[in-house]
Image 1 (cartoon, rainbow, N blue to C red):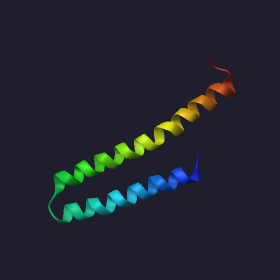
Image 2: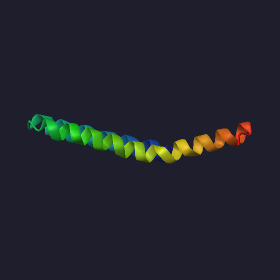
Image 3: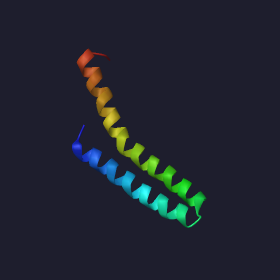
Length: 65
């Protein structure tokens, strides 16, 4: 796994946390929840290629398929 991917995930997490805090302080709880879900989807989309690479590596190591 790339260290750059970890930094990107951390950056998204920090941005979402700060914006979530701001939205909750201004009584916009629904938007804060939607922002959290959007941040989760963004991170999952970033992780999917890494998981695909992991499964491909596992297949090649164990000679599957």
